[in-house]
Amino acid sequence: MDKKPLFLQPALHEKIWGGTRLRDLFGYEIPSETTGECWGISAHPNGPAVIKNGALAGKTLAEAWTSHRELFGNYEGDDFPLLTKILDARDDLSVQVHPDDAYAQAKEHVPFGKTECWYIIDCDEGSEIVYGHTAPSREAFRKAVTEKKWNSLLRRVKVKPGDFFYVPSGTIHAICGGCLILETQQSSDTTYRVYDYDRPGKDGKPRDLHIEQSIEVANCPHVDPELTYRVRQEATAKFTELLREKYFTVSHWEIRGHADPIKKNWPFLLMSVLDGKGSLLIDGEPYPLKKGDHLLVPSSVEEVSLDGTLDLIVSNPV
Image 1 (cartoon, helix red, strand yellow):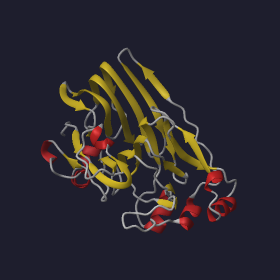
Image 2 (tube, rainbow, N blue to C red):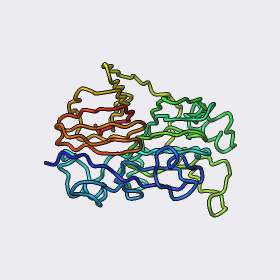
Image 3 (cartoon, helix red, strand yellow):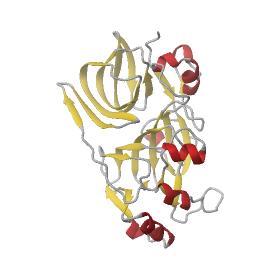
């Protein structure tokens, strides 16, 4: 079985809140000065990534999933489970919420709800996010939304580079202006907007809201999830497991030289290079890595090593 990693060409998406940092910091060819999202590792039909190397070059990740499931350890399911994004929020995103699997399947007829998590790559001084709400019950949440008491309803949290947030389905949230974020999520594009600052979309009209769906799926009351980081410090590397939950595991790898082999405990591995350059080594074969690379390490690989100065977010399905 082929052990070569699959390097991926991201899909770029324009957003009214987007900017130019995906070009300026990562070198991506953006479609406009308002580019908000890089779907770096994606098999979603709304933005599939394209394989750049090897025998599958030119195929989408979705096509590889369908025709070469052995690369993914014959992982079960009709749909590739995860999606990795980088988001450049020049302006505030809408206040929104995502459904869980059961609601998404029943009401939207899609395979997944949307649980996600955020790693703050960079942000302006004083940047913040909306994370949860203050309503003690669904009835109180409905009343505050109906009366548009946004200032008292929405919880705002200051952020800084290196912060990490777990955003399970049902969490009221918004990424605010000035934030550059890597997001790991279920492979879903189902979003319910509850508030969008009364701003117009590209057509000059207010963007659609989904008030009833938002009220139905919002977690009431909001409870911050407890996170326990697991850290393994080596002489030239630090591995921090940020999250392990039922859909995915997400880690931050910091490489400062040569890292000893990391043995397989994944069906397949997703890697995104946030900064630096170096090499991924598989059976002694080096594969150059640089800032902005997104890749998938197939199931046949039993261990990986890394050389260089690299910061990566690494994830895998559970």
